[in-house]
Image (cartoon, rainbow, N blue to C red; front, side):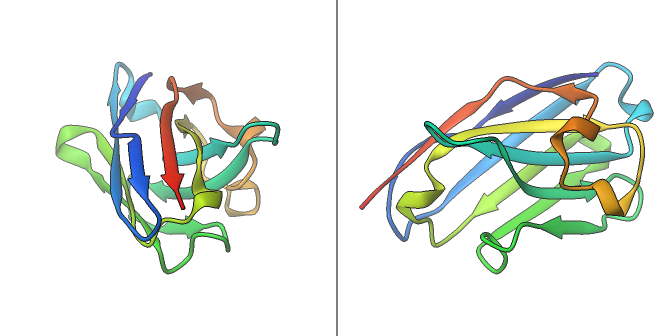
Length: 125
């Protein structure tokens, strides 16, 4: 599975961005798509995830109510709509895919099998 993320950029606090992730290759082998982010000097953290089949969604507490993850199965696309952005949302955002659907480990990056390149999001104050 190959993943290609895009949509990052510079935005003012309170603004919005939509990230996109295109999946190609053996996409049927993945059951969950996720977004992670890594800020300068910090560890990578989970942002959101969605299951391909049911569309079940999972969010980090820090983004609940502001970010929305969605998918388009026909296009093999996953999106992350980010609203009410804050300076602390500044990070490199990565999309990832995993083969297994296990709710208890949804937030663990180590459980994801495929990763795309990052897209930079900068939120100015």
